[in-house]
Image (tube, rainbow, N blue to C red; front, side, top):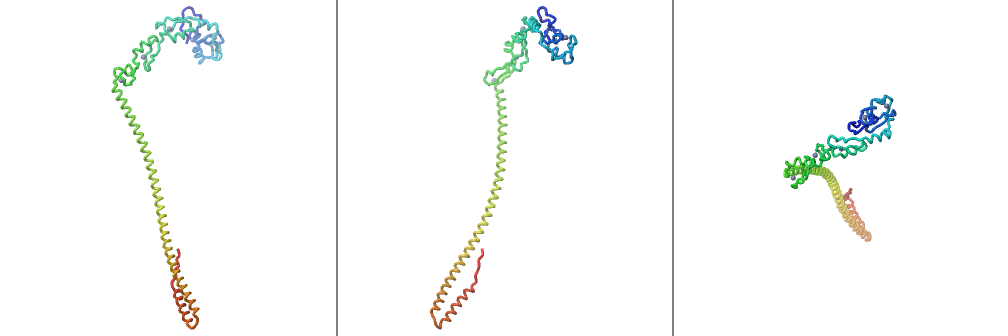
Length: 286
Ligand SMILES: [Zn+2]
Ligand SMILES: [Zn+2]
Ligand SMILES: [Zn+2]
Ligand SMILES: [Zn+2]
Ligand SMILES: [Zn+2]
């Protein structure tokens, strides 16, 4: 949309008016037929039309060009009043520089800088407003550390605020303690389960070892018994050997003693031998 022609001081050439809104061109663009439009006006028109609104000649966005330089210069030199004129600004400046002025105009309405304050004030009154703004804040002068909104000033009670804060901290703390407790419990639980498993494993191993041990013990007992038997047999054999040796010696003695007594002695020795042969022989098998 263009600039309201009423804001201009002095004569405005009709060639500097938009063919669509009939106001003074804003961000102007020109068609090949040399008709000029505000950028927003012609873009809006071409959404539903494909021609120049003035002479109906075919027109497309791609052929729109900036305004002729001499027209642009004329446009820029037009004298325009500040849009805050009704608020008291008497500024008249060239169209070229009006945007810059309006950005800094003391009569422009701007939002209060305090967050959540809904008030719009003229730039020149901002300071005065800030002094009374209900949304200005300051640290509690009693040292409780709170930033108090001006609107809440009267209700501020250090002790109540601190108590609320304390309650909050306490409940947070309880929550955290509960969390830690829960975690520790679950960790303990898993450790306990692990220990129980290990214990039963160990028990099994101990049982296995015990049974191995008892097998070994019974083996040892068997071996000991066998050894005892062996020793007895050895002793027995030793005894027999000794007896045999004696017998052999007496036999030899008998042989050396020639003559009639030979037969009798010989038969005596044989009898002894015979009795030894008949003794039961045990065979030990392990
Ligand atoms: Zn226009
Ligand atoms: Zn045209
Ligand atoms: Zn102004
Ligand atoms: Zn405010
Ligand atoms: Zn306080």
